[in-house]
Amino acid sequence: MAGEGWEAVDDYQVQRLEALFERDPDRLAGLSLEACGIYFDWSKTHLDPDLIGRFAAAAEAKGLAKARDALFSGDIVNPTEGRPAEHVAERGTGAPAAVGLAAARRTRMRALADAVEAGAFGEVTGILHIGIGGSVLGPALLVDALGRRGSRLQVRFLSNIDGEAFDDAVRPLDPATTLVVVASKTFTTAETLANMSAGLDWLRSAGVGDPDGRVIAVTARPQAAVEAGIDETRVLQFGEGVGGRYSLWSSVGVSAALALGWSAFEELLEGAAEMDRQFRFAEPQRNAPLIAAFADRLYVRRFGCQTRALFAYDERLRLLPFYLQQLEMESNGKSATLDGRPLDQPSAPVTWGGTGTDAQHAVFQLLHQGTILVPVEFVAVAEAEHSLGPDHHRSLLLNAFAQGAALMHGRRGEGPHRSYSGDRPSTTILLDRLDARTLGALIAFYEHRTFANAVLLGINPFDQFGVELGKDIARKLDQGGDDEEFDPSTLALMERAGV
Ligand code: F6P
Image (cartoon, rainbow, N blue to C red; front, top):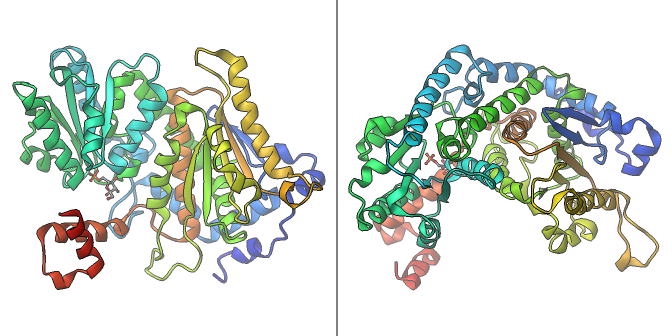
């Protein structure tokens, strides 16, 4: 790590949070910013402007400017798979050729959405969206966050191979008026293909005349979808350069676009593009994704934190922790650097979380008094849309703010069991309102924060070879290979379960 600028970060004398506020009366102004309708507050973290400067220098030494330019220019930033990362092109901020291609594919997606609306599929009241990981978590988040009032269709998401999940997903749907959207970048994912076949059987057994004709496929490999029996007019392609966990901006978002309306989908992309510009052009001291990444690294490197927790103080964002788990852990859960050396610092921490205030009554005990330090992120929305109005919403927000204050200040003097050490860091992210534009910006913020973390780590955030081994062994078990190939514990489990 010598010469990479980390010494200046690692040697920095970190102070208690309360002392940081006492020392700098302007702390809040320096450690908070507003971008894209979102207010970010890092003042309750151990960052200060000087430390941000040191992190910025470390990031520069790690090639941040070059890496960021490469991302937006469509250069190869995913060298292990030899391709660019083109999710930014989906919202118009990538390389011109990729932006043009994404726009052309979006035009096709829109034509299909218009055809659905115009009745080309007869009456449509519901969508069964089948996909897993990046092919489902994004659309599910969008529909759950934005589709509570006025969603035009009932959208159910099916990912797990568990038949209970299938039963749950189809229960409220009417097979006669349901479209099946099958999203899979590779179109080889076992769970998705098995669920597609179960979905077709479900339509067939309900007497739907042409079940295949009710399927829309979304994939980077259109040929595989056609070979699976889906007519090419109903195959929406997206680029190989768009990673699964970065794909909701592409035609993977078609179910959300159908449910929320086309203009909402476009606003989502515009919000993300605005955050792209913030990440690309804002100086480090005012750059939201960068500062967040600096805080992430601070707590992993200096404080040894192995997890970070995110609590959505808004029911509409209850799926955000799940979405971020994949984004952050699949991207940055790596142990080899870009040039193949062992990573010499801890990789991404475990991302976990839940919703407030529920989590306060379940897991916050450990956050306040446990011996394990967990940096906490609160995400809340200032404007209420629910039927109970602003007064009711006030309690929710005050709870979020109180938790951040309690973690920071702690309380002493009432005996060990009733003492709180305080000095526990938190970040607060406050959206003015939850609409498509702001949600787009928020998700793009997390993408760039993940990318910035990867640059600081010197790793490739865009591959995910770690998920392959388990798939491979499951395939071998299914094919019933030579018993000697498998360990006695695995064989005994199979025998016991009768599989
Ligand atoms: O197994 C991991 C993974 O490849 C994810 O990266 C991806 O989002 C998910 O599976 C689904 O893959 P696909 O879209 O190809 O079905």
